[in-house]
Image (cartoon, rainbow, N blue to C red; front, side, top):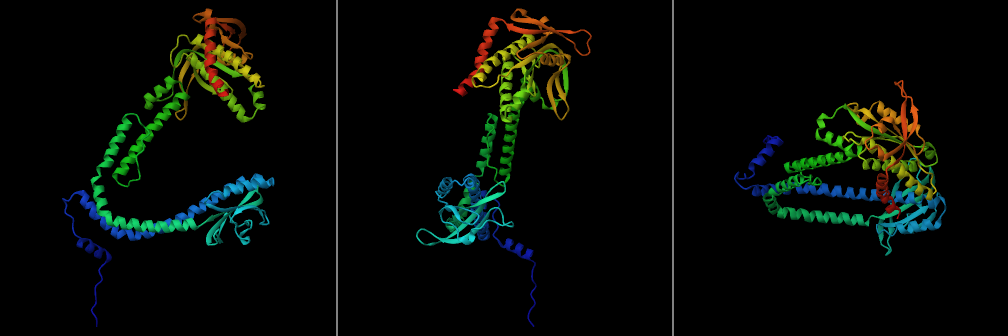
Length: 505
């Protein structure tokens, strides 16, 4: 009767193997410890790793050629739609000939529904492969086959097929042929390179590990340099974050911080374009104190409305309408900036501009009138150009009113905006609707309390019944401004329109 041996558990055997390994002295430098550890890891792991990498590389190359072939044949089919459906033989031949100029493409062809070549260049698949896909076939299919090179040697090929369709009507089939020789050669080269790299890694693992240990301080220096760049205002740093150790996490944290700072900087830029500059600075200075609230101010409001915009829209394409609005909204914005006004909002084809808030301006009444005159004079020049291009003129009417109003953030906690509210604002909107194209209608309070009234010429317009008030409100129509102000406006108009001249030139 033979002896019975007791089989130890696998975990016990592993622990015994590890215990039998020579222990590294604790006081050895990190570089030496890393050298020995790396040597053991490479010897134990490179065999399995090499097999996995080779398998992965083969699969990756196959996927790459399939993705490349599918992409090229899709583009080929899409480009061939017009020539095929119009039976333009010349364009089909040029398209196919240009395609095979790529050294990676062995052949290309366009086949009709009977698998007859409409045009072809280079190697074309065998007739048995030439068929339109059935209902169960994918839109893009592939088939491997063997052909012969120019020297007569056999060559492994793969062809990709895609239907040439327009509105679900298939008129032809696009075919491209790729060679697998490069893939096979690349696969063999990868194996040789991997084997050589494995041998070198095993040979020099001690040296590499020692060098890595000595260079452990480099990531720290990189992090210090990155933080210095952030301190100097360079927010476009990007540290490599593909490390799996603590340094990698630190790099990721620094990149995230830099990205957040860039986003905040971008938000600041966008915010200053969406709300008045003073409001933007106030919001950014204390993000925790942004809330709904307003205060009573004395200011002026200007409404400018494009007359006949509906008919202009009906005569133009939507893209042209948007371009027109953007062009004239840009005019309104630039004119308001010339006189310390801010665009509160765009409402359809109308713009609302405020003067005297959020930054106090004692001359807000005159600035509002001057901005309105500047807009009308600028549009006269712009309409001259439109007439030269045989385009209909664009005319606006403007209403202005001054008085006490509430200014501040209104809305909800989820969505708020800066604006002004009050009877004076409502009256300005109504005055805009009362005017004719080219008119500037202002409330009596604008003229009566205007400092330097000699700079503005106005005529009585009409009496307006205001809701909630028994007495009618007098209004005036602005006819002109002082000559020196008009001369200044001409220079402003030249400045605003000069970029357009440059683009047209």
